[in-house]
Amino acid sequence: MDLFKELKDRLKGEVLDDLSSKIQYATDASVYKEMPLGVAFPKDEEDIVTLIRFANQYHISLIPRAAGTSLAGQVVGSGLVVDTTRYFNKTIEINENEQYAIIQPGVVRDELNSQVAPLGYFFAPETATSNRCRIGGMCGNNSCGANSLLYGSTRQHILSMKVILSDGSKAQFRALSIEEFHKKCNEESLEGKIYQSVYQLLDHPEIQDQIRKEFPDKEIKRRSMGYAIDELTEMQPFNQNGAPFNFCSLLVGSEGTLAFITEIKIKLTPLPPSYKALLSVETASMEAALEGNIIILPFKPASIELIDKLILDLSKENITQNKNRFFIQGDPAAILVVEIIEESEEEVNRKIEQIKEALNQAGIATHNTIVRGRDMSKVWALRKAGLGIMSNVKGDAKPVTVVEDIAIQPIKYPQFYQEFKALLNKYHLQCAYYAHISTG
Image (cartoon, rainbow, N blue to C red; front, side):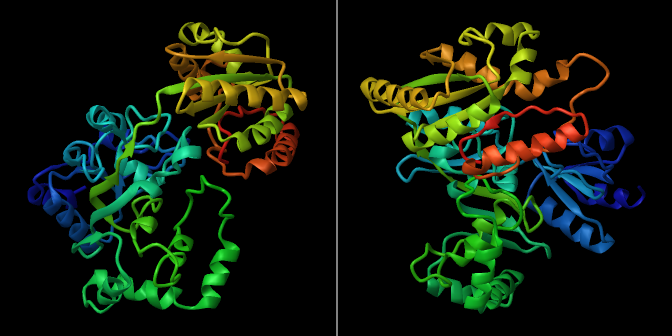
């Protein structure tokens, strides 16, 4: 594309518009594919300002991208992809006393945790791709994972963000007092106009009530989709008893559409207690597993993961994962992997026995297995391999990830399962049911 010659001359970083590069960036980890105009690798903030002004001049869109592990096409589009992994991948500051870190969006989640673990901390939100996903991408998607029962999603762990807005101006979004909020509203910059617009929109009780009514149920803890305007209505000055206003709650989950993030201040969480164990609950039906999840939740486990028969059967044919099946006793229709983390071994054992008793009274489990120590990592390896080993299905028909990361209240799982199974049966299809069953 001829217009990229001008951009290449102005940028310190690189711009690629060859066919090979465009094909590489036309997809993420989802089923979606769309050819971009090219891909840019900005070297610093001024490069990003240049990209934004260039995009405004030629009326093209920018698509901020990190590792591309997203499952719903979040970084796929026909604009110019902006890859932050090459140069925006540094840890700027780790503050042990105040329990925060300041990072660039291209930092890998697990690599950051290896830095802060010796200090007794970690960045708590976890994804199945934590060894390669970037924290900027986690912010875009409001990512969470197996431990979201304990730690929630990324949104709860972001303190502030430095960003570049659509006119190329720089801003920092953080928690503000009511006085600071109103001061921002009086500024003439684009940042000020953003605060003014939100204040004019949300400072009406009837609009707040409509948002609360129409937005997804607050009980769905894993809600990531869309702009979290409902989060803003619960903050000051719209809710006098709410937390200080912080635009980061809206930016997290916005999939890179509102501003270009250049720096993130994240909350560090103390490492969890070292006393832990897994309880594997085998069931004779998917319905029993869904009911078992509801029974287990009141005992406040650290996580509950579901693995169904389709994935369990495929794991038999995988050399690595077949070895990780050591804890499976029968031939279950599904397995619930329940993680218990407590302050003592006695507490772990007590909670496991309570869960087993409750499940036995309901006739849920066909087998229970307790896994401890290093063997726990093998169980988690089997669980995380779910998506990958589905490619091992024999025959010409291969799995396609279309319905992915749905969010349903756990109490509604059994009804949803019956309705969804009927839909699949109508079209002679099957699917795998697995992953984070505990939080929706």
